[in-house]
Image 1 (cartoon, one colour):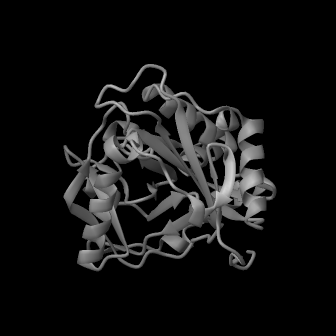
Image 2 (tube, rainbow, N blue to C red):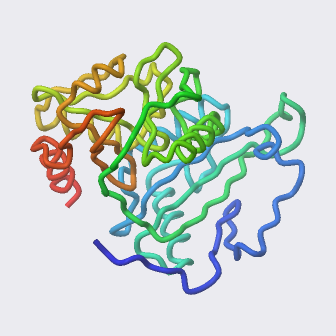
Image 3 (spheres, helix red, strand yellow):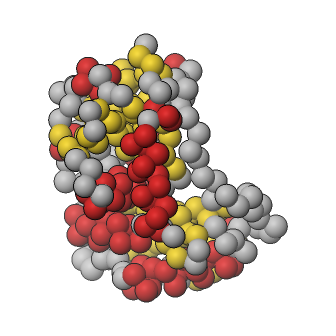
Length: 287
């Protein structure tokens, strides 16, 4: 693990293909992203001179662009361009490992109906990457917020307010993590990560039909498990089915985090051999 890389200067942003200091950014009005949340975002990790889970990020970005009728800018539209753009931003910030956020929104004005052929605007920001594989000491099921499946629930941004609300509940209850259920009571995801569990040699995770985000680490873990012959089930599962697991963990681009306690149940998740195997298989694939 490399040490945290503090920025030695003001962060540099990429706004519509122009690099500029963060202090100089001034977004013009009207702004449909601000007024109508008319767009989406993507969070990725830059390391070893490339984007981790590149194909999964690009697949989700393309699907979000289609669902929102929002064309991807050329600088983000294919793998070589996306990598070149991320290299440009991270180099401008003197970062060899970075957590990069890409925000895209529809340009122009209008009300709910946008003007014809409105351009796609975007903003890219990079910060030092901080991996997080630390165990989650205490988790609970959400009481105030649930997920729901829509044509946009798979991507990040359109339903962001629900995750803000879940994050506030997590804080209020003094929990380290909160697991969301869908409207019919099935396990969906964590506040900002996918949830997995292991039982009797099988890997389980909620289906996208619960309204969970189609996480890139989720997709990558499932692909790795299938390649290694580990049985995987995506489906609609109740909290009781999860609580009967041998190990429970969350996964996103920052890391895999074993859950130790959930609603009074205790798990030795960090010690489970299948979790160790999944981590090793991922390392072998990316080394």
